[in-house]
Image (cartoon, rainbow, N blue to C red; front, side, top):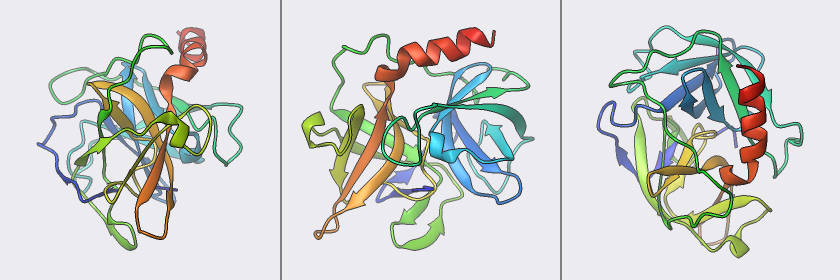
Amino acid sequence: MDHGIVNGEESIPHSRPYMVYIRDTQTHSPCGGFLIREDFVMTAAHCKRDHLMVYLGVNDTDHLPEGIEVDAFPHKGFENKPGDDIMLLKLKTPATLNKTVNIIALPETNGEKISSNCMAMGWGLEEYDKMTPSSVLREVNLTLLDSKKCDAPHTLCTQEKAGPARGDSGGPLICGNIPQGIVSYYITNEFMSYLTMYTKISHYLPWIHEIMNATL
């Protein structure tokens, strides 16, 4: 999905200082992301566009701060289909950290246990079938499924009548206060329940550190 939060609630303004609003300056196609170092944002590879700009410390997208240009590093294995849907954006101007702009720490290892109590957030659609993006950040609590029920390898998944929608791609799935997944895509079943897939961040830790260390 180019992918909003359905059946969620409005976030307390600036309570998620790691959240990043991403937009193509020409097409205005939006995505979410999250700040993992002063100079790096993590998002989904399918959010790659030619003229990406990131906006930090955003609550209301009707009142955006000055954008920051980036260099994009999508995973080379991504081919616009399930799998390897992860991308790093290097900020050409590093962020100044404060109460409204801050980083969030990644998982430390691939084998650590992941809490099933999770949360997704973004500025995407408020209804799956209507073009009603939210101008303010919204969030929703979700329960992680057993990984055997997920659609692709190296993914996490949730299945509810709530969750990320179009415009929320690239945002984090936070489980136990740690970003464990990246919003990738969803599948709808006949009961209008949405099986949402998230790229499993811990699987890509070696690649993440390689990219970030190579660009110091």
